[in-house]
Structures are given as C-alpha cells and as structure tokens.
Image (tube, rainbow, N blue to C red; front, side, top):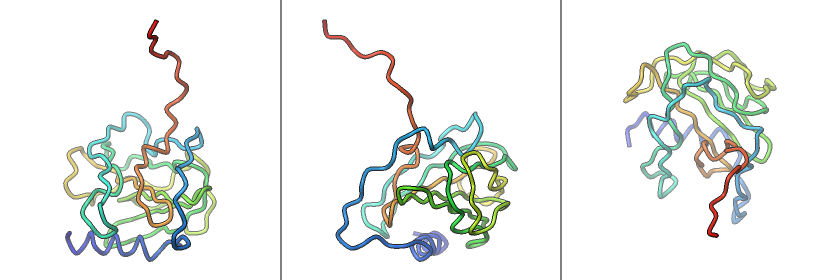
Length: 168
C-alpha cells in the first residue's frame, strides 16, 4: 500500500463515527433513493474489491470513467460530512440515512461541510488526480456503513423484475 493510499484510508476512518463494538452491520438500503453520481455514460472502469482486513489491499469503491470537469452529483439526500482537500485531492463525503457515507474524489469541490444536499445536487466537478485511470478522467465513488466498506453499486436500485424464468 502506498503511503498516499494509507493516508486516505486513515483519514476516512478518522473522519467518521465508529459503530458500537460487536454490532452487526445491517444490509444496505436498496431503494430508488440512490442514483448514479454521474450522468450517463458512466462506465465502471475498475470494480469494487473489498479488503480482507481493515488495512489490507483492495479497492474501496468503484472508478467511473468520464470527462474532466464533468459535474459530480450527490447519489442521495444527505448532509456533507467533509468537503475539501485531502492528500492533495478534492474530496466530498456525504452522510445518508441508514448510516451510509458516500465519498467522491478527485473533485473541484462546490459544497461545504454541514450543507444539506438532495439526490442530484452538483457537489463538484471532476478534477485530475486519479492515478491509473484508463479514461479521460475517473471518479472514485466509495461507500461505507460504519467502518465497513461496501460496493456503492449495491446502493442503486435495479428496478422491478419484469420477466422471470419459467420451468413449465
């Protein structure tokens, strides 16, 4: 793990409340209250890879490919927990109902800590600073419940099932 990544992980842990010890993590809320943080197209160029230990290797979010200076949107209603530079990159973290915190980087930040946002609010513009991005620019979108990193794509509603397999 690079020192820069270590600092990002450490800052993420320090900047958020911890759940009570031994409390089981309830499932993520799956509803239409969450939406993509970028307008289409927004290909997933690097998937979520959960770490096996709190400080182990992994990819604690997804990378979405798009263009530089694309508006980045709040994925759901919430309160901005952090907005500003972190290890040389603009970062926004938003606390949502159900104990979920989403994070977005690298950004030119357009919101302030304590600000209430609604789903679709422009929280920043995508900036340079995401190493290893295979697109013109990449948004790193992360999600956590307590101290557990979760796949932010699991927050998105897949809609209703219209057709089911038939064995008859």
